[in-house]
Length: 176
Image (cartoon, rainbow, N blue to C red):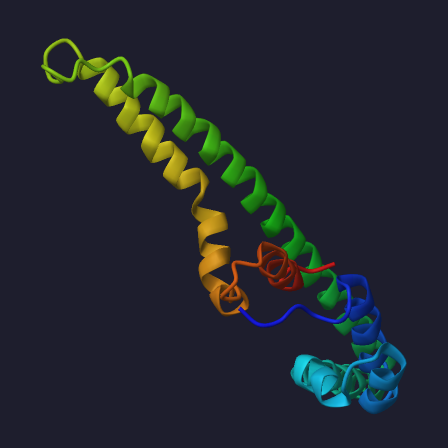
């Protein structure tokens, strides 16, 4: 484990915000008592990504302006529909996951009713119920699992188990 940071998480967040908006790393380093190299090392990749996204947004806006007005309206309407679909799928995944969790819990409770010494004697109805509940739980979780699989590249937890960063990465993959 490396040495403790000279800055608090709140100070690092302020450095990040200002660096990403274009302030120079050396000037920030001088102000916060860390090296400009430390700031660049910590945030340069993110700054490059932010600049790339900003350039893509500018290019998209330019391409939109080049369309006839009726086509602009169609493109904006389509984009709104795609965002809505994305949000609805995210909500479906959330509710489906909650349903899967609940059904799996009920199935787990039913498993306790099975006689371990003779599971097939007198427990067939319970086994069938557990199988049905488990199948329903798996199906309910399918949307969420598919979304996670489709966005697996966004989920790169850091080596130190930073759950906050994982959540930030996941949330970044969802629409606003």
